[in-house]
Picture 1 (cartoon, helix red, strand yellow):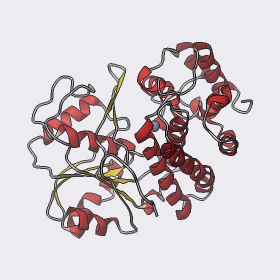
Picture 2 (cartoon, rainbow, N blue to C red; picture 1 turned 120 degrees about the vertical axis):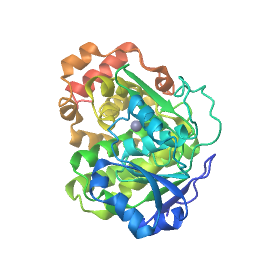
Picture 3 (cartoon, rainbow, N blue to C red; picture 1 turned 90 degrees about the vertical axis):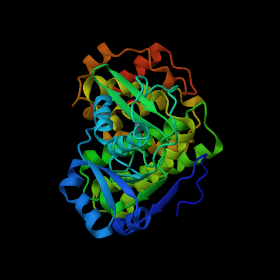
Picture 4 (cartoon, rainbow, N blue to C red; picture 1 turned 60 degrees about the horizontal axis):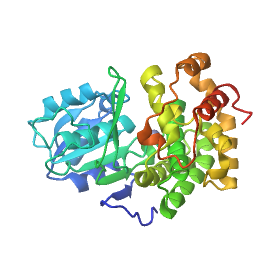
Length: 362
Ligand SMILES: [Zn+2]
């Protein structure tokens, strides 16, 4: 159902109705580090995995917080570096998957250099293989080679590269119990990934086709899922969309909407999926001519975002006046420079104002 996936590193993508059986087949006779969320741990997944599959789980990490912090990952490295981990099994949302990917890299070293998050940091060998089972639909972390690490104290965000999972397992039934926010924000992240890869200097025919697949799926399946949370077809479509969008940004990386988002997540704890999506419609309106987004897709996206009224969601984290007063329009160039258009400081202010005050006018 996923067709051929062309990547520079091998990635196996599976879909299953029986996670336990699939894990059993992949992880027999391996020492496994399980990284999962507190809720899956409380629901008994570590024990179930061990008892029903016979997997040798040598350690469990189940205290991952949203937006994984550098200091917490360094503490986990201290705790786990003595274990002989042969495979990391990640079962959770984007933060769990990112943490597992980072740990798969960290645990290849007994001691970390001070600059372990810097792009120039040299690692001795490849990361430990990661099997990623997403329990949300949106971040695409299960297929991307990046993982985001945050340092809230220092107000910094890092992106660790070359940590793509070896296997992504989609089990849409695991997403059936997600609430509205847990459904909406990751799906918006996927929509942002798709658009960011389209208006990107590094776009290719392949990344464009993947991004457009993602947009079509999200515009159809997100309203259905919000209206009928137990609609398994719609949930399946959202996971597929997240995968296609994740593969698109694997090639292009993200761009301006993500550059805008990072300070908002650092300063106001705004969830990533909201922070990187509430400006999408205004960005589309600002410079539509230079975007490689077909009109029929633009119309669908605008209709979806109009309905969602994201400015109201943003106000739960920060008032529009405070955000506008405090926002530094010197964006993180590592992402903003990928944007194919040319956004001035004034245009950026206009985008923020439109996104915060006039969500219907753009
Ligand atoms: Zn994102």
